[in-house]
Image 1: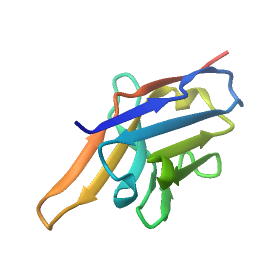
Image 2: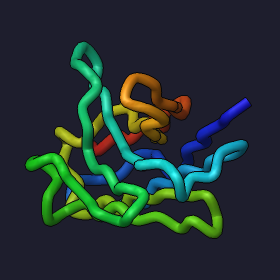
Image 3: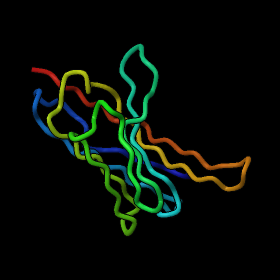
Image 4: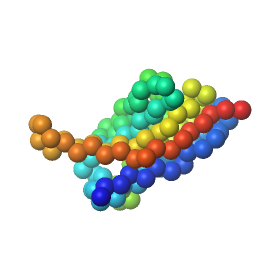
Length: 120
């Protein structure tokens, strides 16, 4: 059974930093595009940052210049360095692994989520 296990969430004051980690098991994560999504109460789940299997990155406008996504394929892991955190960053953060197999089939896995709360 594929598992994505997130860690590193918690409570932080505005302006602070956190580093989220996601470790994948039973997949070769280097073959997957990896990403971080977040969902605040009553809102939809939105993409925060993604990194392709080739290493290209993309960010939501709201986190550009504050968050950095990276991956370590030797550890089957993806990370999200979050700096200058704001209260509006408060959400449950989910790790995602995605791979297209054919034009109509794909593999799409999610972690269980980790809570990030930015508050005084």
